Length: 249
Ligand code: ADP
Ligand code: MG
Image (tube, rainbow, N blue to C red; front, side, top):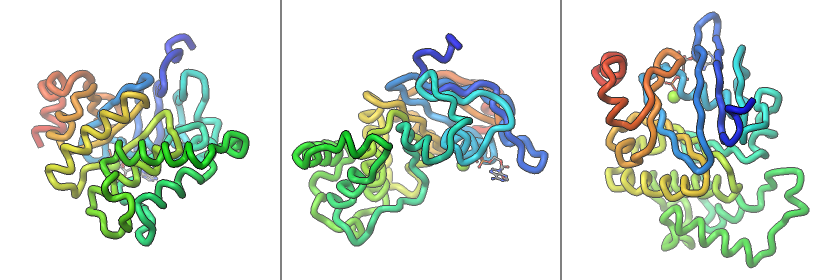
């Protein structure tokens, strides 16, 4: 029990099989509060499955999955897990194209997250301050009155991250955020996620090694459903196993 204490995310010996194929095989990962973890690894390594397990979309066959040091996520459904404060960014942005950037954030803010949301409902002035703060974080302050449809692909991704921030998550899961982004959007996305990780835990799955380098954070390389190597990007990318099974391909 003690090793869970003080962690935001705690996976221990997590396994799951699909038709006899072990997608996750004794996977153990820890993320601390206000820490960012980058996850790399070949296609089929189990990175997305790991996120499915954390968010309750997939049930593990075995192992422990704890949030905030004490909440057993394997006992909860997807809605309950989202309500705890775990936000997940999927690859395809799902912003409301015919609404402004501002209205997208306001809608996200008003979407009740938990059973207590009615009691803790913020005053309108607080909403404005929150939205402005999020706009700064996602680099869209100057676009607040524009329709989301007019944003670039990268800006739509940032807006969706903003919509997740409106839900005030303690843990943010982001799967391949920079796919399809321009080089400058990619660099800006790394800065933006680093800003977010000053107060929240962030798990980023990404293939783009220059982006992972920009993140400058702890890296875990998965392969065949388990941890192959952990450490700084330099340490991990020097690992012979990582070179053989991922980077050297
Ligand atoms: P990654 O995101 O690292 O590329 P995934 O987690 O998507 O890998 O996939 C790991 C393996 O598990 C793959 O072989 C994939 O086909 C399989 N898999 C993932 N989810 C399911 C599912 N719901 N049903 C069957 N097989 C799945
Ligand atoms: Mg994936």
